[in-house]
Image (cartoon, rainbow over all chains, first blue to last red; front, side, top):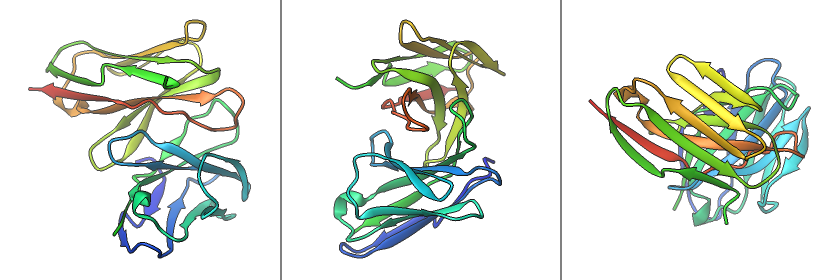
Length: 113
Length: 110
């Protein structure tokens, strides 16, 4: 039990639709990172939020956006879904500082058809 | 060339064997995670280390920052250790950007 909860666990969407994935972090964990893991590949860093602001971003287009809320929850929004967006989306939460543990959610498996 | 190289990619062993998974990286890092991913996707952080060695139960992780190499060892392996093990260094100039190895798929047979 990591204390990080993601919802939904599975989701099927149609190409062109929009999707919102949610992550609930541990209390006090005000840094959250989102990753995309395509089938058979390692996770790719999407972006990180710290104190409700984007704090770093990987090589993902603007249609991938996020929000972080004061209650330690966060959202990943993807607009104009493409087939290649089908993947496992992971969130990880941590407290500020460069040498602290990260806690990962179970992930949301998104399938775009 | 990938920034993070893990070996082996796949490993099948008998219960009780001593397991070693290696990780080499080519970028500057401040620390390194070893992560365990079970079928279905859940990821658990096993260790985060920036120097020396850490031990937790049957798991041991070592890192040599100068040589840019880390190893994960499992003693007295058990079928429940079967999972994908991922080496994920933390980039030295970021707050929390992990770069991920491709993972080592470990199968422990009873």
